[in-house]
Amino acid sequence: MQLSKNKYFKKILAEENSSEFVMATELRNPDRQNLFTFSFDDISLDITRQLISSKQFSKLKMLGRAINIEAEKKKLFDGSFINITEGRRVTHFLERKPKLLMDKAARYNSLISHLKQKKIKSLINVGIGGSDLGVKMVYNALKHKNEGPSLINISNLDFTNLQDILEKEDTRDVFFIFNSKSFSTEETLVNLRFVKNLLSNEGMDLNDHAVAVTAFPKKALDAGFRADSIFEVSEGVGGRFSIWSHFGLGLVASLGLDVYTQLLEGAYKMDKHFLEETLESNLPYILGLTRIWNRNILNLQNLSIVPYENGLKYFPSWCQQVEMESNGKSFDTLGNDLELPASPLVFGEVGTESQHSFFQLLHQGIEKIPVEFLVPLEGKNIIGENKKELKPHSRLVVNAIAQAEALITGTQTNKDKYKNMTGNRPSTFISWDTTNAESLGKLLSLYENATIVCGLLWGINSFDQWGVELGKEISRNIYSGQNLEDLSYSARKMLKDIL
Image (cartoon, rainbow, N blue to C red; front, side, top):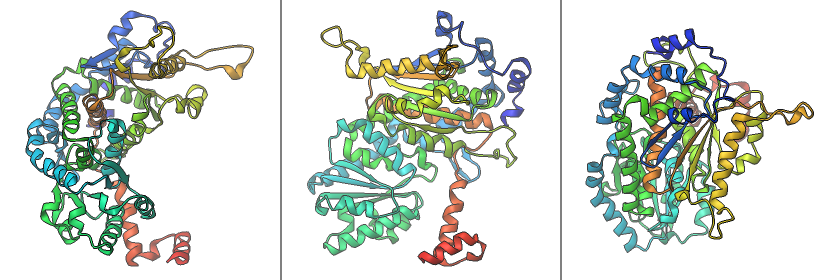
């Protein structure tokens, strides 16, 4: 069912003034803090600065009841939810269950022992999209926990990127992980051919220095990998949800199995919360509802993700893919045109750098852009040893709070109008104690599940990505010389110059 057909959504449109909720008189109201702040373990979700009244919010929370979201959550959690356009189950939730990780542990430990025996210093994780962004993001956040080789991510079709890296490395000290669910991804296979030639020229065996991760092991066998060098994943694990499967192998080998286990444990805990908590206090559901409200009631088209920790630098890029590849759709699950728009355009950068770039637009641009602030509080220890100066991280926390306040309150002056900021610009403030593997796992599961909530409410399939395929198909046709007459004159002229 599309959101436009949801009876509770219709009631909201019919009964409420949807222009915006004026916050000025509400910001200092402790009742609002109690009604609009939610928590699970160390994760806190503060939506007090969203442009919604308590009356409106009560009605918004009813949306899930119209689609029986409790039943949909159970299907997701037990692996019976169907990605209808691809005819396969959605199984990434199963990868986070403790028993499955225990089943994988022996093979993971065997790989770690192999790397130690060969004295591997650097791992090169080769992938694109979901098999790159998640691994890169998590490694950057937790690399201070590194117990094994350093991890380098390669996703560029231009193998000069890989060539530049290998010029600084002794090939004998390097181990490659080739990630491709289909094992037909162009970027990955181009880099694989380069590495096979490199290893062959230096008299080294591919299977001593590389493994493949794929849902199609026969293709990896055909590419030269032995069966014991192939890690098979379920076809039901989508790329953007894949770090919980063997596609997280680079994290296992670099950060260690204990850290990776804690990451999955955190995600599983948030999954359990998502499954079992009532809708009134369910963090992924509440976060998803704020996006529905902003996108479809206030007609705000964008969403900015701003983490205030350098380790989370790649979180906005990861979130872009999770949200926009999942929900960037114009058809519902039955193939009907959507009557209301789905996914916002997601962008972001780490704070405080972003304050000196796009925050100008956030504060004074004509369009309002919701912001989601991500802030580890680092044990809530704000004051330094001398009890006077703020510790460096605490300054980040203060900056995040100040920006959220400035966006919602604004400032007005009759003298210098160019200094005016209208305020009433919504934001969500997500905080936790300190960034470790478990808290990061909870945060990632929170965001994945909020995206899924939105997809269910919009009535779309969040687990396919057919929009990615057309460009690939045209590329293959060009390589094989097929259907070139269908190309534009500009494209044919350019190709004539380079082919």
